[in-house]
Image (cartoon, rainbow, N blue to C red):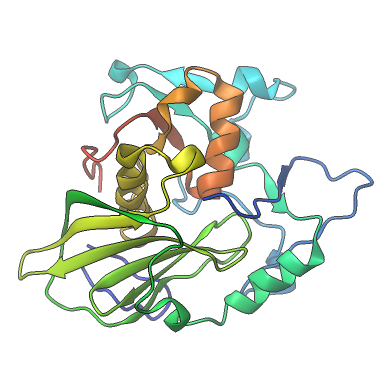
Length: 264
């Protein structure tokens, strides 16, 4: 089921400012913002899935050693995945630009209607066939709004299209057509600017698939990473943090659209 943000709109169912993921801010002046919550919660990151705690880390263990590959026989998805949680669930996202923090705060009140009818700048259209369960009811508006700066995306639904915008800047990075039937919701195409890390159409489609499954259905599952990142754990984990923030638990190189909902 598509689990909506807040009061919910959809029922049952890329570059840009990234800031820093800091494990200790030192003397550098940084800015941080959050949504809706009490100020005392502003520094909270942690898992949105509720399945991992910092206590799982070995005290004094270097980050490079804490980032471990899990072989297919060691996880339910039967994929080789990198456990990114030692970085993504212990880091705090900040920015050195107060305007970015102000932008993030301001966008927490946005309904996303400014994106309605628009495509990402200089985008290409990619055919696909992504399918998700659906109970036959949908309403336009915000589906997911970031709470803290470790949430990197805002997602909206308008006129049969999903809009995926970066939460810090409001920049529209992805748009997807979505068709609803009695039994499922289907995405037949995705629009994105094919550039940089997002140059590979398979990766772009995998990103949309992951964002729907994780942010809307709230399922913890592997997220995609461009294949050129190879086997460097720290590079992959840093990319994962920048791309997906605290929603990035397990990284998988290449196409992840075949990953099923497990254990839910």
